[in-house]
Length: 192
Picture 1 (cartoon, one colour):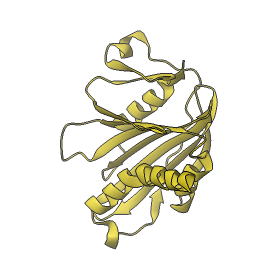
Picture 2 (cartoon, helix red, strand yellow; picture 1 turned 120 degrees about the vertical axis):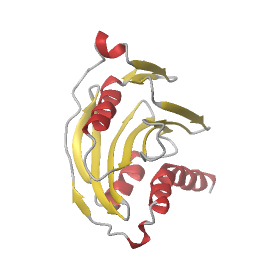
Picture 3 (cartoon, one colour; picture 1 turned 90 degrees about the horizontal axis):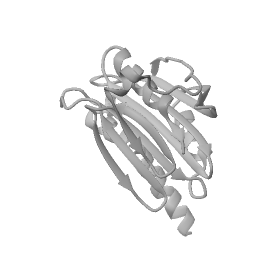
Picture 4 (cartoon, one colour; picture 1 turned 180 degrees about the horizontal axis):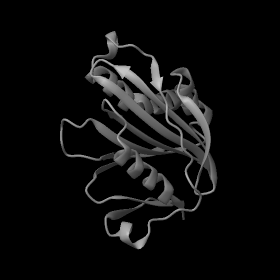
């Protein structure tokens, strides 16, 4: 029973940012239709070059590292079975975007448990790689009351951990700069 409670708690924590966005932008009357999707493959073994490193900050987890833009606001929360790091790419309150990186204990949360959420919401699933590790990429653009919710996620498992990278933002058009920065974060991810 304790395992079931932990799984439910982890699922709730994983979908809280999505629920928050839905509630915040009054999606109860919005169309839950996917308008379009984007697809790209993360290249293998990419790390920031010297010119990019000057504008990036290194994040060191217990068993992994990655780089992110220095100006992003970062907050990390650690629990027994997972670590979540949330980044706000902009301090502008009118820009509603965030990036979440979650590291979950695979003994408590299976990768299928997470990917089924995206399948239920009809996200496009694309095979991908993150630093040589097989991953699944999920992407969708959902029409909500105040615009379009752009959502991209990478999910993979390695060494009894489930890694979950997610970008979500509301804008009328694709924000190529933000999506490129997100891809740079994912590209720079390395296990220690």
